[in-house]
Amino acid sequence: MLQFEWPWIFLLLPLPWLISRFVVGESTEPEATLKIPFPEDFTFALSLSSSSVGPQNRWSYLLPALFAWILLITATARPQWLGEQIELPVSGRDLMMAVDLSDSMKQKDFILDGMMVDRLTATKNVAGAFIKRRQGDRMGLILFGSNAYLQTPLTFDRTTVATLLSESAIGLAGPKTAIGDAIGLATKKIRDSSPESKVLILLTDGANTAGEVSPLQAAKLAASVGLKIHTIGIGADEMVVRTLFGNQRVNPSRDLDEKTLTAIADATNGRYFRARNSEELEKIYQLLDELEPVEKESRSYRPQKSLFLWPLSFALLLTLLITIKRRI
Image 1: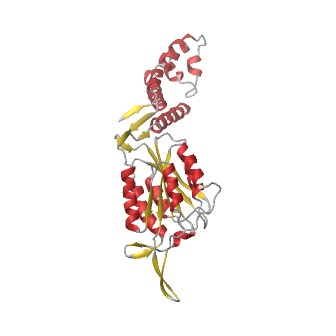
Image 2: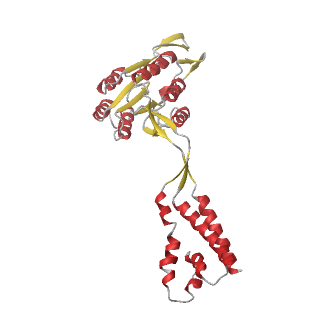
Image 3: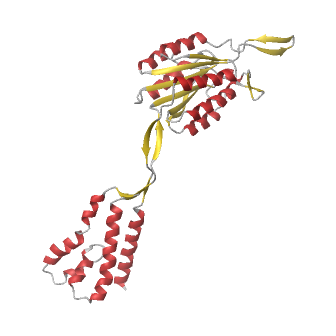
């Protein structure tokens, strides 16, 4: 479908005739109609109609000049081609994910496809699928260790968010765990957004050991701006390791601060979840889909393609040809 951004520009189409009729026509200078060059003044072409130039030669200038003027006006009106209408589902929710990249995420206590993998690999697998299901949400990604970094600002481009999560690496943000700073950064980036539903999903396997803000202080600040925080504690309760003294059972999640994670969730009307294996982690993200459903409110979008270069190019070409012809 063709449309013009400024259709009122077509009211200027009779401008050359008006100039020729009321300005050039009243000039008392006998050679006025022959002195004005084209394209500096378009009235040259129309003035030919009242000069002594022969009819055939006059129309050879007049018609191309008129056509060039019409093309110039068409280009100025900004023609656009509108594509087919596209429905974009929008949930009205801003959802951020904060993922722990501290050294403890190296612990291999998760099984994925029959193989032992570290905690971050299991997180990438499950959280990546979760991101792809969140059609209609604006999503953002925070990676934290000793420091917290905004990896992806809030965006509808879920593919980019999933890609940057998959490219993250343990130790990228430092060896320690700054839970409070991660919450504070999420609050800062989401507090001025307009959606009524603002959610942070924070995943960690330890306790707060770094950062300038305590987790509970950050949670209170998050609650004040309407940010709901769901926390996920990740890591197995026990595993068997081989030592010089034989097999021993150890607790790889002994540093997990479940009390603080629960308090963070309670302070913001969220929930705390415990993921001891890949299956539990997958169930948690499925439950999050139910707690924060994707609402199918839709917005219409029609892709636009600007076409003004075509008439403008032909107008300039005609102008050039007329100028060359006059000089020959």
